Image 1 (cartoon, helix red, strand yellow):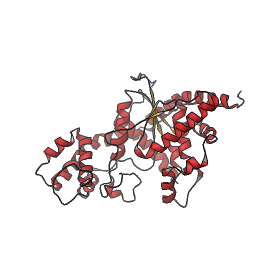
Image 2 (cartoon, rainbow, N blue to C red):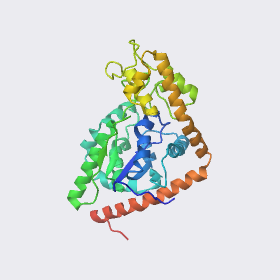
Image 3 (cartoon, helix red, strand yellow):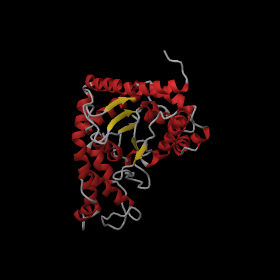
Image 4 (cartoon, helix red, strand yellow):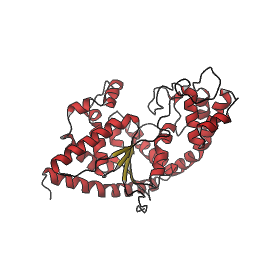
Length: 338
């Protein structure tokens, strides 16, 4: 399973997702589909970030199950381990080792200003741990270990990428160029899919009310039920207007993402039709698209030996790159090496 794909751009890309809860159609539209496309354009390294996941308490058995579930979903969606490096974060100890070094180039005030730290501290007031505060430094280690030129990021991760860049520049200025300073790539389509019951909020896998979130592993009945209950408005016209019609606009975004149609084509398709017909069409489309992915994910999950072989090869390739970066860092900061 050697990486046989050559990067079209000659650039390296890094991306990771936490194996917490089931992934949503928002994750699929905004991230996973882009990851599939990007593996033909960049030299991609994709991680399942289980070390980040434990900043919030996890059930051990569930975390293990979710890790394999995410891997199987990635493969079912078209991520190809022959084209990219696909691995589990904790299988490469260099992440934790570099994060410790980078901590000494990061200031407490910078971490305290992180919006996500403030938000998660408010949500998990009984567990404001150092890992939660240090999350961006570990993320910086993730990226910098693999000499990533580009990192796909959503709006909520821009701060983290900026602090990664600051740390890299700070280290390079002290010890001479060592790290590649990564650039962010921001997906234009599907960057934000909203909650079906509250379109002012992003669809989240950790939402308190799962009725507004469509998960990738939801069965057909659940998908149709959730879309039927989606919030709309009283106008009765299927028209894209995020300010005045956030619910309908969100459904149009989902529909066009799964069908490949433009917003204008979708508006024309449902001109003169009621919201009931529209919501049913969106639901049926999503359910039809997810069915083969779910079937392939289930097939892969029944073959644990194959999944383990993918992770073993991915960890081997990831460690080869990461350990070389770490050795260079250790040499520059003065660690005595055997």
